[in-house]
Image 1 (tube, helix red, strand yellow):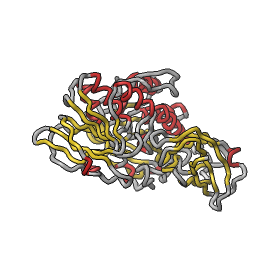
Image 2 (tube, helix red, strand yellow):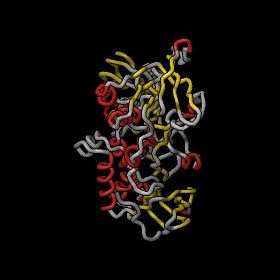
Image 3 (cartoon, one colour):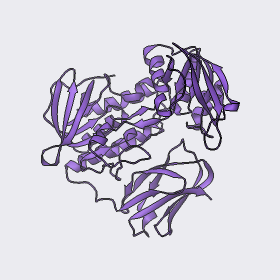
Image 4 (spheres, one colour):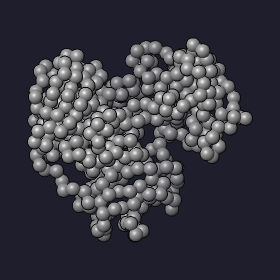
Length: 429
């Protein structure tokens, strides 16, 4: 991978992208392709590429590149495409502050070991900082605090990039995709994986990962079960697990203890949005990301966002598609060529957790991403007006909370709609 390509700072860039993962690189590439002359990507890691650098398994790129790639291969392709367009890349750097600048622009305070603290003016900014893992403290697991408790992503970095095994016998709490993939990875490295325990009555990872990572390797998946205690002094010695009832309350009378030296946590991701909060952007309480229009512009003019900063994605291919939209519209913003403002707000309705984008326009096509709250088979997605009038519906074979639904919303779907708010439901047929 390529790290720093920046030899000297410019005082002004047309577009500055915060984050050098697939979202940030994709946004920078699109901004250059749509007319932005000077584009800078700032990434806090030593090498650009984001989380993909430690995802050495395959399964990436089928939608975006039309072939199956490993994570590093996908990252390298996107990085090479971006650098071919003369995008500046600054790694091992942090954006300390982001404020309004002169003439409607933005000013960033950037710190790096190579260049110290610098002030940069930008015409537009794209936020693509990705997400971070929820930790033990976020779910308040009782017990002692010994060594041997890791987030699944940290364990993945240890094994795939640093060559360290986290332990010899592992329990995995949570059935997110990283946890499922690490169950298989640890088994391949000779670690005894006692099982994956999920508090919900359904798994939270993609079905293909459940099959390929658990079932193919005879790793048990325990649904409606959680870890209720961690035991050990200096190192994890065991964990206690218990089934939960319909209210997710542990049934301690049925608890049992599993000897182990490692507990991996795969309990969800949280969008990394310190800068968004600093800017006081309007935030979605469900996604914990900024609310965005159909152009991926936030509630503040000239600030765009994409990728896991906005909402957590299943596939990096969808991240790249969203990034291309954000980068292209950042360039259009500079040229004063953004599409007319959206005229319809989308509101999550029955069995819908959230919708992105949060607003759309009736005169152009959009890709709508949403997640459901509970699994359904033979269902339908429906768009209703405030007074309950059905505007459009589409049949679906099934929906699952772990799998994001994406839907093309075309102008002809909304040709009979003249309001400013639509409710989105996903219900059984």
